[in-house]
Amino acid sequence: MPELPEVEGVVKDLKPLVEGKTIQSVTLSNTVYTSHAAGKQTIVKGGALEWFETSVQQMTIAAIERRAKYIFIHLKKDGEPFVLVNHLGMTGAWFVVQNTAEIAEEKFRKHIHATFILASGELLVYSDIRRFGELRFLRTIEEHAPLTKMAPEPFDATACEFFLAQCTKSKYENKTIKEVIMDGQVISGCGNIYATEALFATKISPTQKVKAISKAKKMELFQAIVNVLQESIDNGGSTISDYRTVNGGAGSMQNRLKMYGHKQCPLCQSATESVVIAGRTSTYCPSCQK
Image (cartoon, rainbow, N blue to C red; front, top):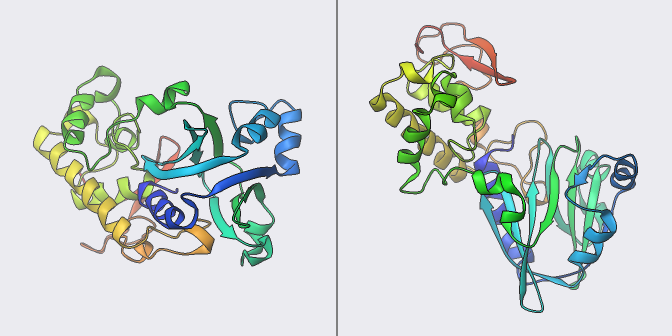
């Protein structure tokens, strides 16, 4: 959390607010400085803080796009392209304000870790309560290998075929289906919430091994993932715990979830069960999902 729909919502909100604007400078929090001094890389990854600060100065925000669960902030300076890659982690949030006092929730004001001062006078603020997110300044995406290994976007024409091919590989076929569909090298952007929903929609147990599921059922599952991701995008994502869209906005998909977080199956009224898969709690109906 956040997953693809939530990140899509952030990008949609950020684009009209900051595209075309120029970054004058950036201020990083004491927490970021202290962590780097201790040999850790909190928030800012892949380089020294001074280098990061200098690099983004006088950069124009040319475009913002989503790729899987990442935000790509495309920058330009003197005609040369660069990219600031952001992952929201568990609790990352963006704000565009004149003053940080405008951020309504205290927990986000208290955990501001990067403030980009724009030439327009506004502040582009990145807050992250649990500090699992990241900001990474790159000349090209290829400079950070994990970004080159992401599966196609689930809405791409090639994505289902790619998913089916990945499922036949020995590294995946003996794993549980829940773990595999949350793997960004198999399907982009599908995390615990929407994997739970798609598996319930297709009545597949999250503990089922990939190799035991027919090709037809895998295709049905892939389409269910696409459907629930699109439904969530259409409803602004799921605002659960600390997820917010830009400037503290909220989505409503959490009100439409049928299995995630539920104690009773909406189909058969049986009590749901939970199992930990790949470090995430997976809720399912033992009666309906086999």
